[in-house]
Length: 157
Image: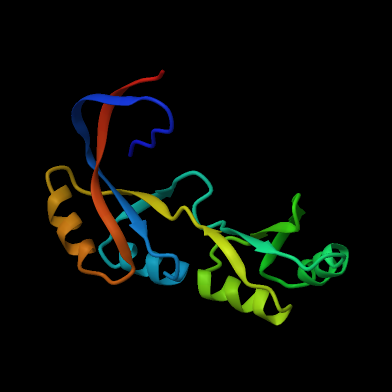
């Protein structure tokens, strides 16, 4: 998998044999993801802080402390980070879906303005069977994308 912020991707040479990258929807329950992979007798690795989502919310003036204290009591909230300009970032625990995060915020009268969930997993497949599994996983409604794990050269500017 290649994530490029600043730079140009050049010379994509190949892919890693026996590996594919799956990206899941914001509302894919972690248990359903695991079940889909394990039902094929495959193994996987998380990427980055996969499935540890966070949301950005607007907060009413003067309510940051009260809302922060209330949110920290919820079992799905891992951390609350006050930001400038009446905003707050709420980090949720591993596996929280977008719908679950929205429900937590709704209980406090808040609505998220942004939601981040980097749900990428590297899945080990039998070598030579990568495309078979890509095609199979792409049919699942919880999958945003399924790709080969490409190897390339990045020129950073």
